[in-house]
Structure formats: structure tokens, C-alpha cells
Image (cartoon, rainbow, N blue to C red; front, side, top):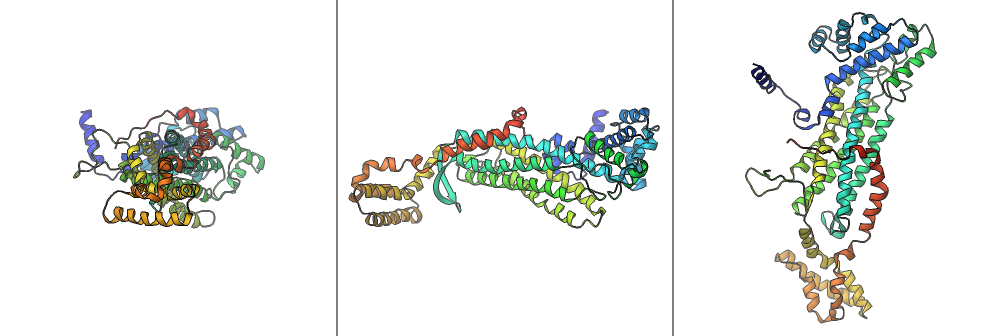
Length: 488
């Protein structure tokens, strides 16, 4: 019977819209961070913190009342809370009544002196802080995997591209360091956004703390100490000194802008991977039984990188929500922020979460095809080597302008073969057959060695990893071995 009921419940769920961010993509820990269960348990913890602090500062609250609240902190009757909210049209009051129902002794002092934003805003700030703490180790793992990749391929020459046209050579590892540099900036931005968060604290209906001043019979020191005590119980070092009914919605801008910036970094990285996959130089992981296309069996589509780009666009566009919300908060507050923030704040973190998990999967299994890279280099390198050839001729006693004209003519002929006839670049053969270049024919192999065209790229990789990347990862070493499995 249990199996039948479970199946029927599952079928019923299929009749409802479910956010793909939760049903398809995001991790359990991030999904829980913004769940109703965590939110309402946090509300109860905040009521307990408030009661403990008020008791410590002299209000007539008993140990028995606090013990009763603590014993029921997590056994929430969600059905009763839903019925109360349907009747009262107020979510906080619904949960106060539900909590009071199982804590009859403590009922008179639950939420004493507080306004709804005491639990609402403070819980949001806790969720933001905890969300950053979930994301940061995941971002660190991506950086670690990419750093290992960059180190492995630090000196493998590859065509550089500007305007997506062949340019001077770089190395595969140096290109990965361009990706890493953006992600390193993102780590610092996320850490700063998390560390800059403060608690709303105990501020009352319009932020003046008037209700608490009344509770403590005008004792301003006790009201200030109450704010400090609850802030510390919630795990924050500081509270905002001034608020309206809510904390400033610019805080949400600061948090979500760092996530949008991360989205831009990931979009750029994964776009590069998609371009390189088209060139067949680099591919993301591809499982043995994975299907790239339902119609074209030979295809190996970069679907993970495409997913990251798709979700990153959503993450970037979510940035518009807190900007507009902060701009229209009238005076001490208006409630048109609430519905928007219920969606935009969790979705930003949920989206960033799955992007990082997917990118970790990609960076753990990047496949490089050195022979393809080498072929592309040899296709373009003769054109790039012309300056080296001119310099060699001059050193052998030749005239620069004369040599330049010779190479210009031969280059145009070789380019015509490539562009008009679809042939290979035969500039090197033309140079070898021209008697003018006889004095340097023995130097051509050295002049065309790709490693002579990559400058200080390998040294730059080594220095960057040693000075910028590895030290940044030190605080996250305990979480570095965690693997991710993509279900879909």
C-alpha cells in the first residue's frame, strides 16, 4: 500500500510546475538552504535567541519557557501553519500561532517586541551567508582543477585568437590562466560579499527600537545590548546600525552582483570551450553511452558547457531584480519587495550552485588533442614566422626591404592556394624552393619551432599559479577532494 500511495503522490507531483533549478539541477545542500523547513526552523531559533537575550537582560521570561521553545524548535506542523496563514493572510503570525500551539507555556513571550522583519530579514541574511559558504568551496574546486590543467599544459603551444582569427601563439595552459584569473577575482568578490554581510538584528517596526525601549523601561543600554547579544547568537560579528523596517535592499544588490559577475566568468569560459570543441582542440567529458544528437550519431556536442552558458545568462539577468527593488523602497519600507525577493534571491544562489557543479565536472575531464592543435599551428605558422625569416636573412647579409617583398609575394601566392583552392599552406615549400633563401635553409626548422613563438607563457603560468592561485585555495583544502556526479 505504501508503494501505491507513493506512486500516486509522485504522479500528482507531475501535474504541477516544478522549478528545474530544484527538480533537475541544484545540489541538496543549496536546495535545503532556501527550503521552507530551514526558513521556519530559523524563525524559531531567532525567537529563542530573542527570548534568551531578553531574559538575560531582566525581562520576566523563565528557563521553562525557553526549554519548551528549544524542545519544539524543529517539529513544525506545516499543515497547521498553512491553515493559519490561509486564515490570517500573514505568514509570520501563522507561524507564531503554530509555534505557540506546541509551546503553550512560552506562548506569551514568543516574538516579544519584534516585528515580522525580525525573523524575515534576519533569516534571509543567514541564508545569504550560508549560501556563500556553500558556493565558495565549489568555486575553489573548479579553480583547483583548472590550475592542475593549466600546469599540465603550461608549455603546450596553441594558436592564439584575436577577433576569433589566428593570432600569435600562446599555450593551452596560459589560456586556462585567463579563465582562472576571472575565477580568482570571483572568489575574492564572493568572500567580500559574505564578510560584508551584517545582521539586521533587533530593530523594531521602523528601525527605531521603540518597542524594545518600552520593554526595558527606557534603558537604552539594555536595548543596545539586546541587539548585540542576538546578533552574536546568530553567528554575525556586527549588525547594521541603522535600518528601516528592513535592512537596506542594496545589500541584495551587492550579493547578487557578485553572483552575476561569476555568471559572466563562467559564460566566457564555457563559450571558449565550445569554440575549441568546434576546432576539435579541446572537448568536455563525454560518457561512453552519451548521445550527442538524436539525428547525427557522430556528434559530440558540448552540452555541459552549453548548460553553463544557458544558466549563466539567467544568473546575469537576475541582477535586474535587486536593482529595481532597492530603487523603489519607499521611506521605511514597502512590501512590493517581498514576492520578488522570494524568487530572485534563492534563484541566484541555486543557479550559481549548479553552474559551479557542472563546471567542476567539465574541468575534471577536459580532453586535449595535441595533434589537432599542432596541425592548426603548422597551417598558420609559416605566415607568422615571416618576421623571423626576414631577421635571419638580414643577419646573413641580406636586405630587409628586398626580403620583405620576396616574402610578401610568396605569402600572397600561398594564401591564394589556401583560400581559393582549399589547399594547405605551402609558403614554407615556396621559400625552400626559392634560391634567394638558400643562406638560411638550414635554420628553417629552428625558425618554425612553435616553442619559440610562445614568449614567456610557461613562466607566466608557473608564477601566476604559485603567487595568485595556490595561496587562495589554502582555506578550502579540506573540501578539495569532493567529486560531483551530474544526474542529467
